[in-house]
Image 1 (cartoon, rainbow, N blue to C red):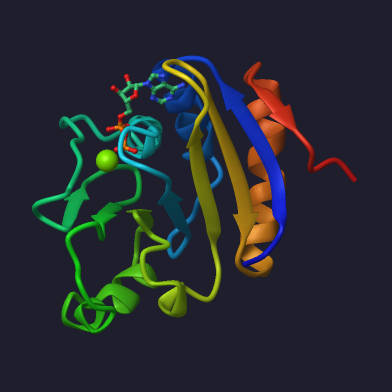
Image 2 (cartoon, rainbow, N blue to C red; image 1 turned 90 degrees about the vertical axis):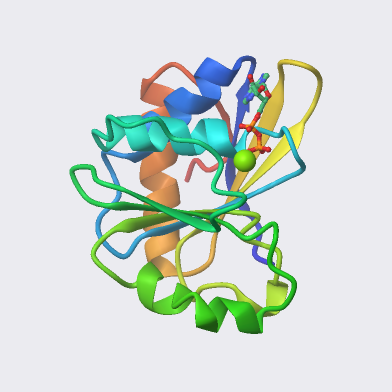
Length: 169
Ligand SMILES: Nc1ncnc2c1ncn2[C@@H]1O[C@H](COP(=O)(O)OP(=O)(O)O)[C@@H](O)[C@H]1O
Ligand SMILES: [Mg+2]
């Protein structure tokens, strides 16, 4: 696993969603954000913010039972949840890798479930529950595009008034 590029500390679900919302202005088709962390850490909250920022109007819920929910936005949002998958081979059946490279941005809950099957590039966002309302969100990059995205996202979070840590050069 790569080192953390930066972190954001949020103190409400709304702040975590705000972090997702500002990411929407930075992503382009083919970008991937893995969302990792325990149940209730805030993966879906972050995805909701991203969806809102992309102009998705329909409700965004956890795709736990569907594995993939597609939302029409300014660019399509492919919202995966790998929680219920048992084997990495099932990713092939889902056309997972082709979808990640398609015309949309992918947000993948439990995206670190199969460490041997991570996408080649993008960002890995790990949400840690600190207490009821506080989350530490650590962002790592998986490749050059991920590094670029992480750098821009840190700046956008800081501009949005969020509590960012690290990542300055
Ligand atoms: N700082 C925070 N960030 C995100 N969610 C928070 C925060 N504080 C409290 N919460 C609550 O934690 C829960 C997170 O749920 P959810 O986003 O569905 O988690 P996950 O998808 O990781 O299982 C929600 O009920 C949300 O209101
Ligand atoms: Mg979820």
